[in-house]
Length: 263
Image (cartoon, rainbow, N blue to C red; front, side, top):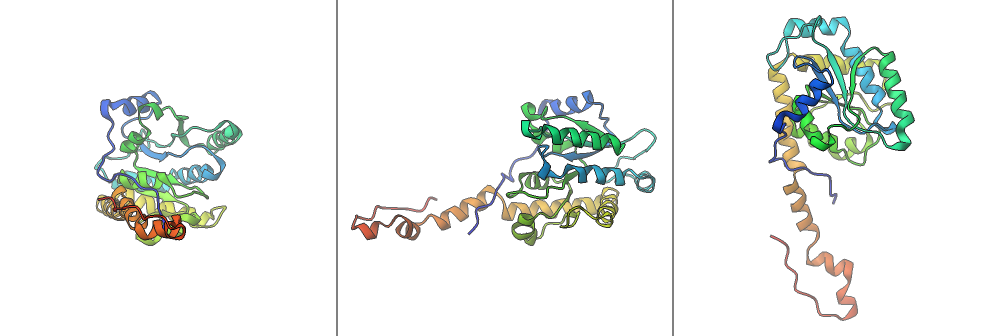
Protein backbone atom coordinates (compact mmCIF):
# COMPACT_ATOMS: atom_id res chain seq x y z
CA UNK A 1 0.00 0.00 0.00
CA UNK A 2 1.23 3.49 -0.83
CA UNK A 3 0.98 6.49 1.46
CA UNK A 4 0.71 9.49 -0.87
CA UNK A 5 0.92 13.20 -0.26
CA UNK A 6 -2.43 14.64 0.74
CA UNK A 7 -4.18 17.95 1.37
CA UNK A 8 -7.22 19.09 3.31
CA UNK A 9 -9.93 19.42 0.67
CA UNK A 10 -12.22 21.11 3.18
CA UNK A 11 -10.13 24.27 3.07
CA UNK A 12 -10.34 27.06 0.53
CA UNK A 13 -7.51 29.27 -0.68
CA UNK A 14 -8.32 32.90 -0.03
CA UNK A 15 -6.29 36.07 0.01
CA UNK A 16 -7.24 37.45 3.40
CA UNK A 17 -6.32 41.08 3.68
CA UNK A 18 -5.60 41.12 -0.07
CA UNK A 19 -1.88 40.86 0.67
CA UNK A 20 -1.13 38.81 -2.47
CA UNK A 21 -3.20 41.19 -4.59
CA UNK A 22 -1.17 44.12 -3.32
CA UNK A 23 2.05 42.20 -4.02
CA UNK A 24 0.99 41.46 -7.58
CA UNK A 25 -0.01 45.08 -8.14
CA UNK A 26 3.35 46.19 -6.80
CA UNK A 27 4.99 43.91 -9.38
CA UNK A 28 2.99 45.51 -12.19
CA UNK A 29 0.41 42.77 -12.72
CA UNK A 30 -2.98 44.20 -13.66
CA UNK A 31 -6.40 42.66 -12.86
CA UNK A 32 -7.14 41.79 -16.50
CA UNK A 33 -3.76 40.20 -17.21
CA UNK A 34 -3.93 36.48 -17.92
CA UNK A 35 -1.84 35.00 -15.11
CA UNK A 36 0.09 31.76 -15.59
CA UNK A 37 1.46 30.55 -12.26
CA UNK A 38 4.67 28.54 -11.90
CA UNK A 39 4.52 27.88 -8.16
CA UNK A 40 7.52 25.56 -7.78
CA UNK A 41 11.00 26.36 -6.58
CA UNK A 42 13.43 27.33 -9.29
CA UNK A 43 15.56 24.23 -9.77
CA UNK A 44 16.76 22.27 -12.83
CA UNK A 45 14.40 19.34 -12.37
CA UNK A 46 11.45 21.76 -12.41
CA UNK A 47 12.15 22.30 -16.14
CA UNK A 48 10.96 25.90 -16.06
CA UNK A 49 12.22 26.54 -19.58
CA UNK A 50 9.19 24.54 -20.76
CA UNK A 51 6.85 26.96 -18.95
CA UNK A 52 8.57 29.82 -20.76
CA UNK A 53 8.16 28.04 -24.11
CA UNK A 54 4.50 27.45 -23.32
CA UNK A 55 3.82 31.12 -22.55
CA UNK A 56 5.73 32.21 -25.66
CA UNK A 57 3.55 29.94 -27.81
CA UNK A 58 0.38 31.05 -26.02
CA UNK A 59 1.20 34.69 -26.73
CA UNK A 60 1.37 34.21 -30.51
CA UNK A 61 -1.00 36.44 -32.53
CA UNK A 62 -3.41 33.67 -33.55
CA UNK A 63 -3.95 32.67 -29.92
CA UNK A 64 -4.30 36.25 -28.72
CA UNK A 65 -6.89 36.81 -31.45
CA UNK A 66 -8.97 33.86 -30.21
CA UNK A 67 -8.73 35.03 -26.60
CA UNK A 68 -9.93 38.47 -27.71
CA UNK A 69 -12.72 37.14 -29.93
CA UNK A 70 -14.18 34.67 -27.44
CA UNK A 71 -13.37 36.29 -24.11
CA UNK A 72 -12.23 34.43 -21.01
CA UNK A 73 -13.89 31.74 -18.92
CA UNK A 74 -14.53 34.21 -16.06
CA UNK A 75 -16.57 36.62 -18.16
CA UNK A 76 -13.71 39.07 -18.67
CA UNK A 77 -12.65 40.24 -22.07
CA UNK A 78 -9.07 40.14 -23.28
CA UNK A 79 -7.59 43.01 -25.28
CA UNK A 80 -4.03 42.29 -26.48
CA UNK A 81 -3.42 46.03 -26.78
CA UNK A 82 -3.62 46.49 -23.03
CA UNK A 83 -3.92 43.04 -21.41
CA UNK A 84 -0.93 40.73 -21.14
CA UNK A 85 -0.15 37.07 -20.62
CA UNK A 86 2.18 36.97 -17.63
CA UNK A 87 4.24 34.06 -16.29
CA UNK A 88 4.52 34.39 -12.52
CA UNK A 89 7.64 32.68 -11.17
CA UNK A 90 6.64 32.46 -7.53
CA UNK A 91 9.30 30.19 -6.07
CA UNK A 92 12.77 30.83 -4.78
CA UNK A 93 16.04 29.14 -5.70
CA UNK A 94 18.43 27.36 -3.37
CA UNK A 95 22.00 28.66 -3.25
CA UNK A 96 23.24 25.79 -5.42
CA UNK A 97 20.60 26.65 -8.04
CA UNK A 98 21.40 30.34 -8.46
CA UNK A 99 23.18 29.64 -11.74
CA UNK A 100 20.08 27.85 -13.03
CA UNK A 101 17.84 30.74 -11.92
CA UNK A 102 19.98 33.20 -13.88
CA UNK A 103 19.77 30.90 -16.88
CA UNK A 104 15.97 30.81 -16.62
CA UNK A 105 15.68 34.60 -16.34
CA UNK A 106 18.00 35.07 -19.31
CA UNK A 107 15.94 32.61 -21.35
CA UNK A 108 12.69 34.36 -20.41
CA UNK A 109 14.10 37.72 -21.53
CA UNK A 110 15.42 36.21 -24.75
CA UNK A 111 12.01 34.66 -25.41
CA UNK A 112 10.41 38.11 -25.00
CA UNK A 113 7.62 36.94 -22.72
CA UNK A 114 6.07 38.92 -19.89
CA UNK A 115 7.22 37.44 -16.61
CA UNK A 116 7.51 38.39 -12.95
CA UNK A 117 9.94 36.86 -10.49
CA UNK A 118 8.73 36.80 -6.88
CA UNK A 119 11.68 34.74 -5.68
CA UNK A 120 9.68 33.44 -2.73
CA UNK A 121 8.33 36.87 -1.71
CA UNK A 122 4.84 35.45 -1.19
CA UNK A 123 6.09 32.91 1.34
CA UNK A 124 5.49 35.08 4.38
CA UNK A 125 1.95 35.99 3.35
CA UNK A 126 0.99 32.57 2.03
CA UNK A 127 2.13 31.20 -1.32
CA UNK A 128 -1.13 29.26 -1.54
CA UNK A 129 -3.06 32.50 -1.85
CA UNK A 130 -1.47 33.22 -5.22
CA UNK A 131 -3.56 30.41 -6.68
CA UNK A 132 -6.61 32.62 -6.17
CA UNK A 133 -5.37 34.86 -8.98
CA UNK A 134 -4.03 32.21 -11.38
CA UNK A 135 -5.90 31.42 -14.59
CA UNK A 136 -3.65 28.47 -15.42
CA UNK A 137 -0.90 26.52 -13.64
CA UNK A 138 2.28 25.35 -15.36
CA UNK A 139 3.94 22.30 -13.86
CA UNK A 140 6.55 20.99 -16.31
CA UNK A 141 8.74 19.13 -13.77
CA UNK A 142 10.57 16.16 -15.23
CA UNK A 143 11.05 14.52 -11.82
CA UNK A 144 9.00 14.68 -8.62
CA UNK A 145 8.67 12.45 -5.57
CA UNK A 146 4.91 12.97 -5.73
CA UNK A 147 3.93 16.55 -6.49
CA UNK A 148 2.47 18.97 -3.96
CA UNK A 149 1.93 21.67 -6.59
CA UNK A 150 -0.31 19.28 -8.49
CA UNK A 151 -2.60 18.86 -5.47
CA UNK A 152 -2.56 22.59 -4.79
CA UNK A 153 -3.69 23.31 -8.35
CA UNK A 154 -6.47 20.75 -8.01
CA UNK A 155 -7.56 22.22 -4.66
CA UNK A 156 -7.62 25.74 -6.11
CA UNK A 157 -9.75 24.55 -9.08
CA UNK A 158 -7.26 25.76 -11.67
CA UNK A 159 -6.41 23.88 -14.90
CA UNK A 160 -2.87 22.52 -14.96
CA UNK A 161 -0.42 22.27 -17.85
CA UNK A 162 2.10 19.59 -17.02
CA UNK A 163 4.77 17.18 -18.10
CA UNK A 164 3.82 13.60 -17.30
CA UNK A 165 6.73 12.70 -15.01
CA UNK A 166 7.10 9.02 -13.96
CA UNK A 167 5.41 9.16 -10.54
CA UNK A 168 2.47 11.04 -12.06
CA UNK A 169 2.02 8.42 -14.77
CA UNK A 170 2.06 5.52 -12.29
CA UNK A 171 0.37 6.82 -9.12
CA UNK A 172 -1.75 9.85 -10.10
CA UNK A 173 -2.90 9.78 -13.72
CA UNK A 174 -4.83 6.47 -13.44
CA UNK A 175 -7.20 8.09 -10.90
CA UNK A 176 -8.90 10.01 -13.73
CA UNK A 177 -7.57 13.57 -13.55
CA UNK A 178 -7.98 15.82 -16.58
CA UNK A 179 -4.79 17.69 -17.41
CA UNK A 180 -3.31 19.64 -20.30
CA UNK A 181 -0.43 17.36 -21.19
CA UNK A 182 3.02 18.31 -22.43
CA UNK A 183 3.67 14.61 -23.03
CA UNK A 184 6.26 12.40 -21.40
CA UNK A 185 9.30 12.96 -23.62
CA UNK A 186 12.10 15.47 -22.97
CA UNK A 187 12.94 17.78 -24.49
CA UNK A 188 9.26 18.48 -25.10
CA UNK A 189 8.51 18.19 -28.85
CA UNK A 190 7.23 21.32 -30.55
CA UNK A 191 4.08 19.50 -31.64
CA UNK A 192 3.27 18.56 -28.03
CA UNK A 193 3.72 22.19 -27.02
CA UNK A 194 1.43 23.47 -29.76
CA UNK A 195 -1.23 20.89 -28.89
CA UNK A 196 -1.10 21.87 -25.21
CA UNK A 197 -1.45 25.56 -26.09
CA UNK A 198 -4.40 24.93 -28.39
CA UNK A 199 -6.15 22.93 -25.65
CA UNK A 200 -5.38 25.66 -23.13
CA UNK A 201 -6.92 28.37 -25.32
CA UNK A 202 -10.04 26.23 -25.76
CA UNK A 203 -10.35 25.83 -21.98
CA UNK A 204 -9.59 29.47 -21.16
CA UNK A 205 -12.33 30.68 -23.54
CA UNK A 206 -15.01 28.19 -22.52
CA UNK A 207 -16.50 28.62 -19.02
CA UNK A 208 -18.40 25.32 -19.14
CA UNK A 209 -15.29 23.36 -20.12
CA UNK A 210 -13.13 25.22 -17.58
CA UNK A 211 -15.56 24.44 -14.77
CA UNK A 212 -16.09 20.83 -15.87
CA UNK A 213 -12.37 20.09 -15.78
CA UNK A 214 -11.65 21.84 -12.49
CA UNK A 215 -14.69 20.39 -10.70
CA UNK A 216 -13.89 16.89 -11.93
CA UNK A 217 -10.31 17.22 -10.71
CA UNK A 218 -11.41 18.57 -7.34
CA UNK A 219 -13.82 15.70 -6.82
CA UNK A 220 -11.23 13.13 -7.95
CA UNK A 221 -8.61 14.68 -5.69
CA UNK A 222 -10.86 14.70 -2.65
CA UNK A 223 -11.68 11.02 -3.17
CA UNK A 224 -8.08 9.91 -3.60
CA UNK A 225 -5.68 12.36 -1.95
CA UNK A 226 -7.51 13.94 0.96
CA UNK A 227 -6.17 13.77 4.50
CA UNK A 228 -9.18 11.62 5.39
CA UNK A 229 -8.24 9.09 2.70
CA UNK A 230 -4.67 8.83 3.99
CA UNK A 231 -5.97 8.35 7.54
CA UNK A 232 -8.05 5.40 6.32
CA UNK A 233 -4.96 3.81 4.76
CA UNK A 234 -3.00 4.27 7.98
CA UNK A 235 -5.73 2.51 9.94
CA UNK A 236 -5.66 -0.42 7.52
CA UNK A 237 -1.88 -0.77 7.72
CA UNK A 238 -1.14 -0.22 11.39
CA UNK A 239 -3.35 -2.88 12.91
CA UNK A 240 -2.61 -5.71 15.32
CA UNK A 241 -1.55 -8.14 12.61
CA UNK A 242 1.00 -5.65 11.31
CA UNK A 243 2.51 -5.20 14.77
CA UNK A 244 2.77 -8.95 15.26
CA UNK A 245 4.52 -9.32 11.92
CA UNK A 246 6.87 -6.35 12.27
CA UNK A 247 7.64 -6.11 15.96
CA UNK A 248 7.49 -9.83 16.63
CA UNK A 249 6.21 -10.03 20.19
CA UNK A 250 5.10 -13.62 19.56
CA UNK A 251 8.67 -14.67 18.75
CA UNK A 252 10.05 -13.48 22.06
CA UNK A 253 7.38 -14.92 24.31
CA UNK A 254 6.23 -11.48 25.46
CA UNK A 255 2.68 -10.76 26.38
CA UNK A 256 0.87 -9.20 23.47
CA UNK A 257 -0.08 -5.59 24.39
CA UNK A 258 -3.62 -4.41 24.02
CA UNK A 259 -3.94 -2.59 20.69
CA UNK A 260 -6.95 -0.83 19.29
CA UNK A 261 -7.10 0.68 15.82
CA UNK A 262 -7.59 4.45 16.16
CA UNK A 263 -11.10 5.68 15.50
